[in-house]
Image (cartoon, rainbow, N blue to C red; front, side, top):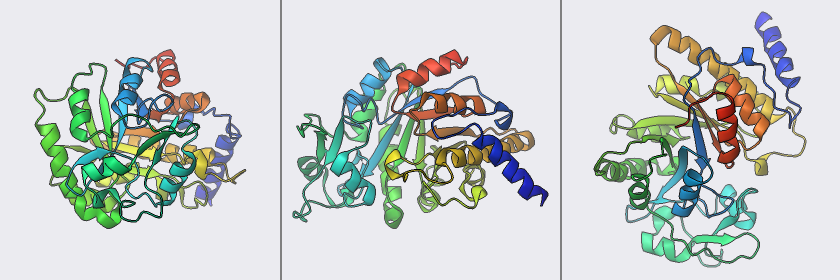
Length: 347
C-alpha cells in the first residue's frame, strides 16, 4: 500500500508540472550525480536544411548549429556495405509514413520505388550498394525535387568525421531488425574494419545502439572494443508497468556504460492521450536516475543517460535539470544555448 501511495504521489507531482507543453521538472526528483560535460547530439544532422544522414547535414550541424555530437542511422546492403540510412525495410509502418509525408521538422523525405516495382522495392539487405543508390534517395517535401546528394557509406562518414575537431561523440544506431539479427556480426565486422583502420584513431567516442537485446547479445562480447547501449523507446500510449520501460537496468545487465531512452515521435502520439506521454517519460526517467545513483554508490560505475528526441526548449531544460548526460535533438542551436546557460561544458 505504501509503495502504491508513493507511486501516485510522484505521478501527481510530475503531472502538476507537465500539462503537455509545460515541461518544468522538480529537480529533487532528478539524479544525485550530474556530469559537467554535456552532449548536444544532432539527430541525423541539420535536417531542417539538408537531407538526413548526409555529410552536408552533419557538417552544418557541427559548424553552424552548435552540435558537439551526432546521431547516425546505419543499415547494410546485400554486398556488405554499411550505409547511412534510416529505414531498413521500405514497407515498415514508420518508413511508409516517412515516405508519404516525411517528419515534421525535416525539409526532405526519403523516397523509393513505388509498390508496383517489387524488383527494386526491397529491404536494404536485399540490394547491393549500387542498386540501392539507384532507386532510393531524398526529395523535397513540398516541391518533390530530388536532392542531388549521395547516400553515404560509413567509410565516407568516418573519413569526414576524422577531420572534425568539434566532434566529441557519435551514436551509431544499428537499424538491423531483430528477425535479421544474424547480420549484426557481419555489420560489426565492417564497422570494426572501418573504425580500426582509421589512422590516427578517432578523437571522438563511438557508441553503438540497438533496441534489440538479441542483436546486442550477438555482438557485444565478440566486439568488446566498442561501447554499446540498449536503446529503449517508450510507446506513445499503454504504459502500465513503468519499471518495465526503464533503460538503466539493461545497461547494468549488459555491462554498458551508456543507456538511452526515447520519447515517441509526434507522428505516433494520438490526440489528447491519457496519460500525457511526457508525464510517463519523466516518471520512467526518475526511476532510471534512482537506479543509476544506487548503482554508482555501490560500484563506482557511472552510466550515462541519453534522452531522445527533444526539440521543445522547456523539455530540454527540464531534462538537463534532472541530470541527463546528453539530448538528441533536431534543434542543436537552441539546446547548445540552454546547456551553456545552465553551466554545462560542451567543448
